[in-house]
Length: 166
Image (cartoon, rainbow, N blue to C red; front, side, top):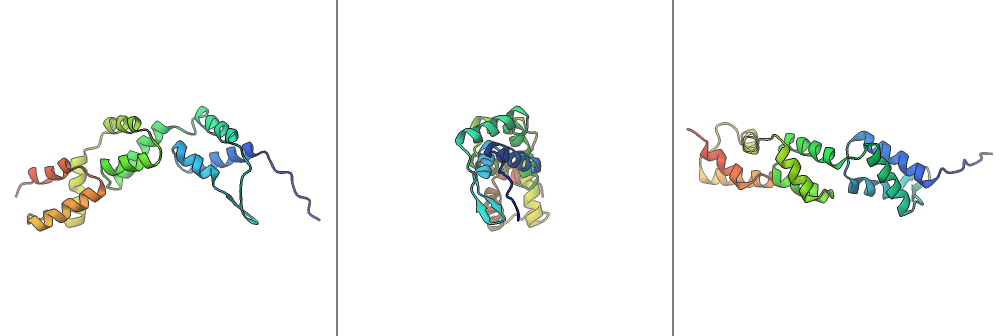
């Protein structure tokens, strides 16, 4: 007969999950809290963790104390990652807001990042529509709509044609 092992305390199980989650990539505090609160899929299906709010707070505090959780590092890496994927500053700000990052932390990181958004917008337009960029109004509107969707600012989009030479 199999004897069931006694379960570890909720705090220890939460801490293990937090370290595993943060070992994959950086997360914001809000993301980590959401993932920790999600039910764990066990052998018998989803299992809720019987943890108190104090357990969650202790785990988050431990992660900050041991530098597993760092919102500044998360924001910096997130901006770099999303800009490499071709997204503009407006879209990145919106996504960071959804992830629970404070607006002032986002703005600080955006000022400190060394990204030429105008050049990035031009690269995205060329990648999508080819070189040379179309000069017809209807085609320019398509490019503008595409870049706005990707999160670029209108001034960066308009700079593409201001700096455009035939």
